Amino acid sequence: MIDFGCHRLEVLVHLFGNAVKVTSVNANLLYPERNVEDTSTAILNFQSGVLGILTVTHTAEEPQDTLFIYGSDGSIHVPKLNKGQYHIVKSGQMIREETLPPHSNFHQPLIGDFNKAILQNRSPVVDGQAGKVITEIIDQIYGNP
Image 1 (cartoon, rainbow, N blue to C red):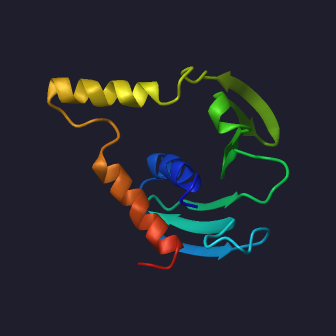
Image 2 (image 1 turned 120 degrees about the horizontal axis):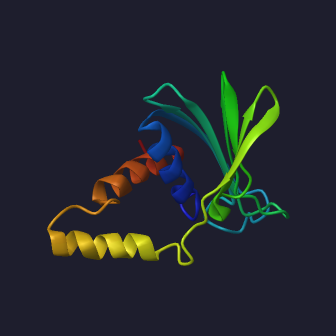
Image 3 (image 1 turned 135 degrees about the vertical axis):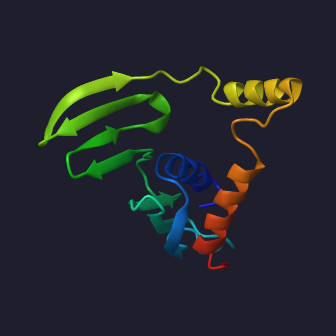
């Protein structure tokens, strides 16, 4: 979870707010010799009332980086997060597809904002508090509340 799940936790917290309750299962399914899990699933109750499930693994043959949001009036399907494409679905039918291409260098906008924040004497968009929130969730996932 801490390897790459932390980045997906950031997405979920950004969309749904802070997690108020976290339940998890961690396992070494394929690499038992490692001193860290190779698979982790977390169930998160967000302050907004949303219930989310995040699973990350190093054991799957077919890599996935998907996001599905299901609501009472429809859903949003993101087949690959770093591609910037998503589908809006209502009554089981895709009603719209949109593409928001990511920056050619995923890190550059964050580094640029950090530099501007220093020059403008302001907090960066992603600050230490954001990292603290994710670290607290990861601590709960690993059973260290």
